[in-house]
Image (cartoon, rainbow, N blue to C red; front, side, top):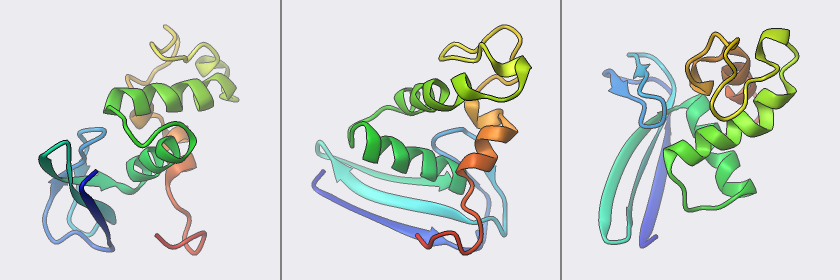
Length: 123
C-alpha cells in the first residue's frame, strides 16, 4: 500500500453504495470512507459501519491483502458455524440450504455483531 487514509463520517450528506455488500448508505447514516493507492491503483470506497468492522477484523486476524469474497467467507466460517439459531447451523461459506440469508451481510445476527455499539469504541 503506497498510502491509505480513512474517515469516520457521522452523517452521510448523500446516498452512497457500500463497497463490500452493495447496500445503500442512506442520508444520515454513519459510514467509513477509505482512500488510498495499492499496487499503483487509486481507490476510494464507502463502507457501512458493520462492513468496515468486518474488513478491519479480517485484516487484523488474517491478512491486510484481501478480496471482498475472502472477507465474507471468513465471517461466514468464524461466526455462522456458531450461530445459535437452528436454521443457520449449516451456514458455512456457501450457506446451508436452510439459511434464509443470501449473504452474511444480509443476516441480522451478523450485522448486529459487527455494528459498533455507541461508546463501545471510537474509530
